[in-house]
Length: 545
Image (cartoon, rainbow, N blue to C red; front, side, top):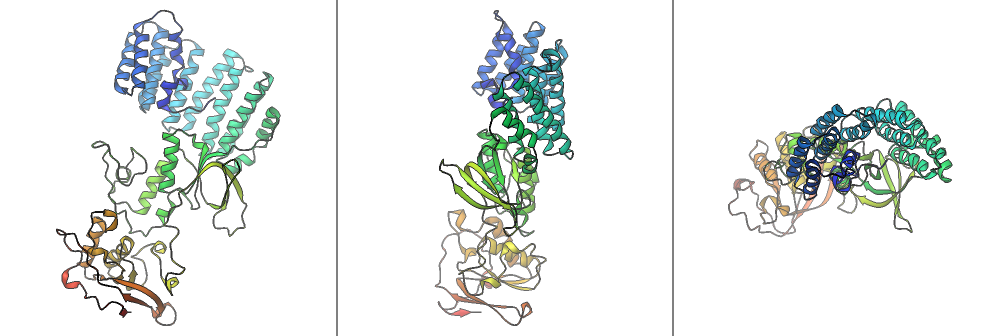
């Protein structure tokens, strides 16, 4: 009942059920060409010579003499296809195995293998459940309904039904069926005087249910069964890793831990205070786009898309967009999280993080936005990763300058086109400020950019210290538009005041000129602002409103 370790570990560690049929071959005393080719195929696979390994396995299938050897060779070939993520080929090979199976017991490894491939290929879990239900029927007929083989078969089916319930509309019925099956396995193990295994059966299902706190809380029969077998009250094991935030960093880290380092997905939990994966990107102004370009280079240089968070993925491919919007990028992150089956708890606010004497952590969480009135839960985890990002925490108030609370931070803007007003002052001339200015100009509104540094004149060898080319293109277009922005620097804002009563009177922005600054470099660059539009900077220290 061990959780599969992943396709690439399957052949090396011989942990996956798909390789079980190959054991027949190694119990024979006589060597054969097929046996030698399978051994060679495994050796080549360990050396990462995958295509050569596949060729040896294919030849073994052709040379296998009798039915048993042919079945063994086909099972090994199916294992290779699975390990190489060629799921359709693996399933087609397993169909060939079933065609030559004559004994019911020989069906069991085949059915388990097919269920494993279907689950890995992200096919509907009911298909995997069908295979495991068939395997359970065979085990009960062949070994008896009270045998330990039947107990393991009941548990394996219960595990998949529990996973299926987490995405199904008929979750209650599936959970009831899974609970009945695992209690059956628990009873058989107790009758066989194996209390440890009985407790393990129940513990595995309860651990799967921890992703659904409501289902876990109502599983009273399972908790009672665990107490009966172990003599102890059940409590969830500490998570391996708790990740705060389900944005780009959180999703990328979750997939790295579960797919590369092979932590079990239910042992890694992402908590997100928003309503879903990529929530902060959904809050971007609708016109805001990534300044770094996305380009799918997998079939060419095998290098990363600059905006990808997982190797082998590309927002350019998923979204067919070079500069994705926030909404598009959130869709990319959601697709990754769903495909990787990450455990994500949304609408959850982290209230406190405390270190325990054993080095693990207690993380107190509650419903987001409830002002402390909702029920608090304490989660335990060996490690905590903070991936909450910066966009949700703007420095929009505090000791910036008097009147800063009157300003609208760009994270509060849903759309520049829909923003009321026709004359704006943008404080700050780096990426966010120039994004605002270019979008306001594109929508026919006047604006003045007030910045401590004339970033539109900065050219350096470090691309992180100058405006991105994508931003520069849009600023050039804005400066050539009927409503070009005024670009004023070096100016330091020291106060913002209301010009009259209420918002209708507008605002006065007070700033002080800084010392003149020379920006070397950019010898061959086209200026962002026409020379005729450049304004002469007054004396240092003089004020402007």
